[in-house]
Length: 197
Image 1: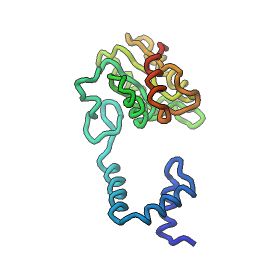
Image 2: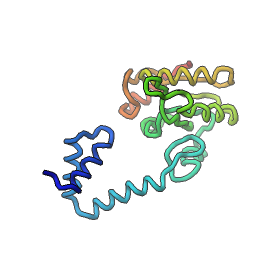
Image 3: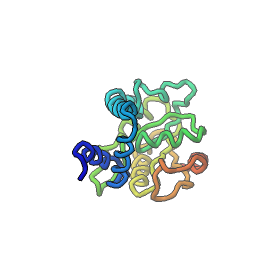
Image 4: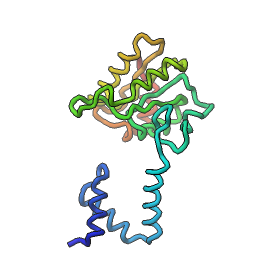
């Protein structure tokens, strides 16, 4: 017999990825125990991220300025583009401190079974960037799973005929895994051992 406001919070929390009913209930009760100011700060942060964060017009990264901080950083090499599926893959690569190029976020991966085709991810934006900005290498850092491999192959096919080196991360990453769970050493080795595709 949960009070309706608490039941509503639990229900909303179950909509988050990886949060089941028990975890949602634990989180809800934790929030309930905390001072009102902390709950308000959490609510404000959620609303702020929804109103102030948007996609970079250059690379599709999540940002509050356009172009994003990575795209405008003069210390970055704009001729080296690392292609990732989602914006949340970028921090994993950034943690290595080895990559000095820029990014392109595809906004997903090809998955015919889920109805996600080439028109649903931003390969066209990548091709446009490569053709218009003197890019020398594209590192395809899609997840090492079926969808990621299909996406990498599609990108390599689309870049054929354009004077650009296309490489794929080495498989220090586990097959079937996601980039967001890779540790720094594995990610650094994968970047270091990338191969042409």
